[in-house]
Length: 276
Image (cartoon, rainbow, N blue to C red; front, side, top):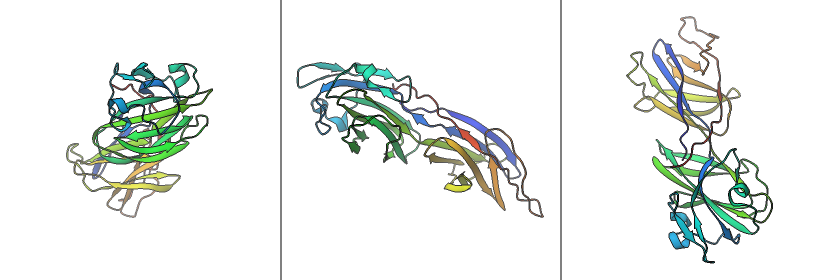
């Protein structure tokens, strides 16, 4: 399950606004329920048909599936030590087989997002019962080889990946984008600033723009780690802020009402917790 930690990065005071800035950091999925290996590598065959099918599966640790050859396979928890989930380590060395990996993703908001995937060999992906990606190919794992959109719903989301194997190395790497969010509050620390323009910039160019909601909250999905600049709009300009409390005044109007605090935020990639 994907639960990136929320941390308060910046709290600063401006004449009309107090900003709390936090990051849900990049989510590299390392904790999975895995099932396999199944004999055969037909990416179109539903090996879970006996338990409701690939689109509807909701496994728990210890659940079993009987293959067409009469073998009983068990869903087991697997925690990868790196960003690439090594299925050779999990299942052993086999040829012409396939396996499944499943996890739940918990979200506080409904949002369109993008999943990045690299696989060895081919892969098919279901998100909340919908087939969102399929690529029957022989290749090595390269992170972010494929990227495809998904509709994240508020609450629990289901992610299932089927990975085929011909021979040699076998595995996959799956990542969600950075979810960055925070709140804009009045100086009393309680009253939210609603409908305030908040922007994220990459290489000095505006990457995305959102409005704070009725609770003062805002959020962005970012495609990768790196250096970003965040700012919110005030009466006559913008406030820039970051995680280091290093603010430099670089511009002001004659009446002193525009203050530009030019800073950036270094976003890092955390370790992925295990699913329930």
